[in-house]
Length: 240
Image (tube, rainbow, N blue to C red; front, side, top):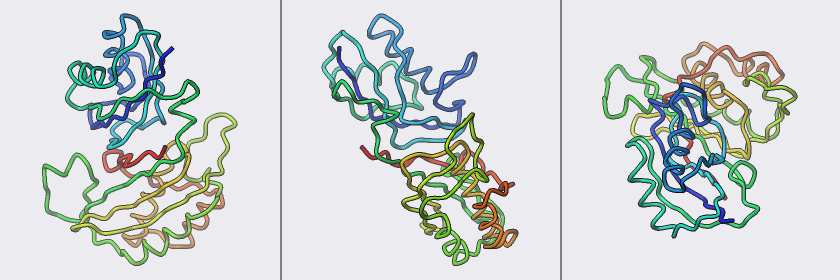
């Protein structure tokens, strides 16, 4: 049995996230169809994480197992010939039998991009949230430090079942890059909506609609009412 590992990227605009859902276009679904066409049977790939509808990935890891052998370079070419233009495979390799994309990755870096401007750039618009407000960057930078370390993020997430709400944030910073404000968050695991609500809280604080004390309360379990738009979020890097 061969364990094929893929590094891919996708534009999330026209996808309902990673995970297969009946009747909906998903990244896992289109990848599964391409793999099935090449291997002659249905094989569902495992992804490193779920993504919300509309969220993008510059770096994403998936794997699947099959008895049929394909040279990695040939498999890369064949998959890209079959996949739609909004998904691309950049690397294929044979991993150890025990490698599992969901559990074997060591961390993920998400970047949320917000553009505080009345000007519109149609080449950037699908990948950021443009808002007609000036943002207080220094306050946002100060607030980002509150998220570092291990916290109960139930106030920032939609928990599923008995899911552990405690997450350790390894990096959380706010930087400006050519007028675009980037909120960078790194951890080993994330909860559903967590990064978008962290971004929402920091953005609304930057607009003067929240305080540092509000964010402290959210970190104590009070629900954050602001979820930033999905299109501004990109899974930037997966660490192996």
